[in-house]
View 1 (cartoon, rainbow over the protein chains, first blue to last red):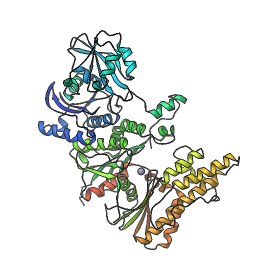
View 2: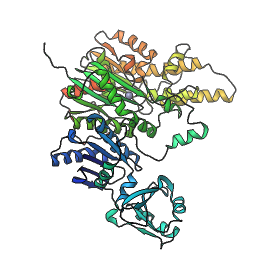
View 3: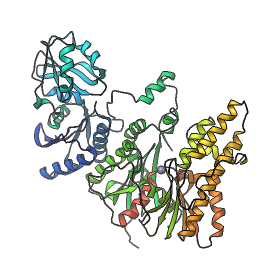
View 4: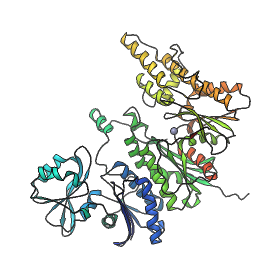
Length: 241
Length: 341
Ligand SMILES: [Zn+2]
């Protein structure tokens, strides 16, 4: 199976071409540049290196969120349009799982990948390795750091992963039992599209048109609206005219 | 007669409509699929950018599939891909731009970046060919400007709004009158039943430039209504609407007349969402009677709002002029034509 894997969910951007679990080529950047400018030229480059044609791909795997809304929009629109226009398979993978997967052979730890979601909130989930395979223990969510710590207190050993951990390290060491927690090394801190592609090769393909990012957060306007309305109180939001 | 037809696939997602179209030879619509989010933004009394961006992602490939199916064409039949890259809401624009880039890359087609405002002007191309030099009066929810077209694919601003767009002013005073967003159509209808008794200000009408300002009018309107509320007076909404619309139309028409005097043209193009306003259409037709050599070209009513057909028409002209983007094309939310030299 030939796979194109795309992760634009946060500032690091990673793309890869894989074939049957083998990596052919990948590029990961962490330059603070607009993904809209960078993504397609990088993908174009991967195809040139491998001499593959876009039609050769069997499946597109994309990091589905959580993460930066703009980043997700670019990656997911790109991925679903690829799948739609070439009639190929599409698979979405949690952006947090991609980080956790690099620690998949660390047994006995609750693996907690996290992204900074500002104002002391994070996007985080909890994963555990069972026989080298990850099992989700805590659902991916948008959560206050304080609340996350409460969820984690019952666990004997917790390892945090992701480059944003650095900014929360001090707080986490204060709020949790410092003997129970540890932090993955920096070389695991960035999402790798190769890892994303490996996870995505195993998952079932999804319906393309209805595929959307996992923002894990309503917009402020919608949250406000729902205070006075029921979700069912409306005409179809989008109509063909 | 064995001319190969040239098909452009066009994307538009600059605000609250997701649209994909297939256009033949720059002036024939094979399909023009438009998914509007108005019902969603009605909840908030105006377009919420993040909500708009999210809806675009839900719609974009659906619209793409429908556009090709309705046109009865396949990717192999296409000559190029055109896309709105600005101006507009950045998150919304990015969806169309990302999708268009992938289609162009996947099928090895040229990618043509299109200015949304050029699209509005070229909506009129579906009525008949543009004649140059031409002047376009572009009035929409986001923009109010006068554009000079010396030749195909040449656009120069000679004047624009310094604050609110005309359509924006309609929505804001609509809120005061308790009219649901978008308010333009209903205010237009009410205006026809009322009289201009309030004589609201006509900002900048006598100034020696081609710029507009509508925020003063909006404030005057709101103050009038609030003052009446405070003293318990009930104002006639039809007269309020008529007075407001008369002020807008007077300013637009006067500035257009001034522009036609300074920049003689063969054609006046009326375009943009507010160009569907019947009061404005009637007045422009009337004013043009004194300009013998200027023909009037109005965008078809159903193409006055945002749609991808107009992007395909403008994209065709740009493509013929050699305009092409590479895979690094980005959305440019504040994209503008250059000012006339
Ligand atoms: Zn528009």
